[in-house]
Image (cartoon, rainbow, N blue to C red; front, side, top):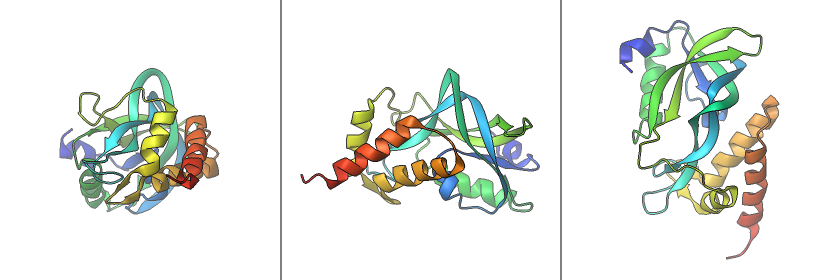
Length: 188
């Protein structure tokens, strides 16, 4: 996507489905529950920077394309006048290893209104993409991984807790949260 295309969006909306729910890092003027069609939230990206290392990758959530899927999260409206700084910040944060691709996507807000939002989706051809890991495999990886932004379990628990607070059901994240809590208490 060209920088101009993202920066032309007024107002600028950003789709939060994982860490942007609890740590947007930019000034948010408004937030609304929203749904993105054609993608699902998935621990399908190996994290070699934020929640793991190259030697011991963690896992982070990504929007993974699937025709019959939908992802519930937040539409975050960027404070007027902060669009340029927000896009620059998000690119530095989200495009650190080019495993994410920047897209403008249609979101359906809880009132039925549609807005165009900036979102970061997984590049299924990228080396960090891992599809179809079982929940147990995900739990084992997440339990032990630590990266530049902290422990991988913290990322999982913050995301699952915020989704529950918003009233967004994600049974896989709920299961993973409980399993990682159990594994974290188990002596090695």
